[in-house]
Image 1 (cartoon, rainbow, N blue to C red):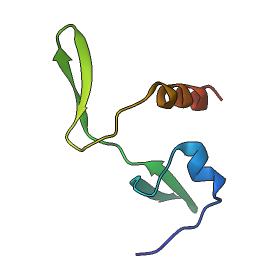
Image 2 (image 1 turned 120 degrees about the vertical axis):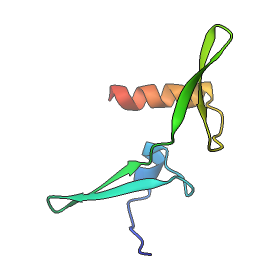
Image 3 (image 1 turned 45 degrees about the vertical axis):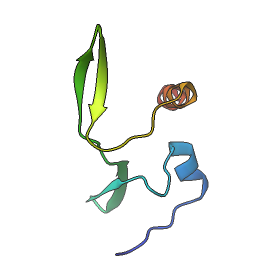
Image 4 (image 1 turned 30 degrees about the vertical axis):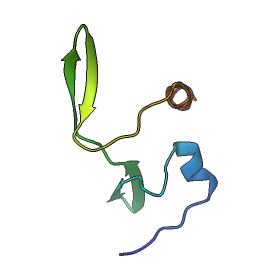
Length: 74
């Protein structure tokens, strides 16, 4: 196993913690990191669709959602 060291601010800015799984790809001499996808499906709960994963996931807070929207808008 090897380690990559990135500037401290980068994981915080992207919401990456020590337990976040990352996919690593090398393309054209560049290393790319992306948060690994978590398999999920949509289930109906009454009239509301709910995204369900097989892996345990922490619940999203209003602050989590707002931060994600802000990151996408930049």
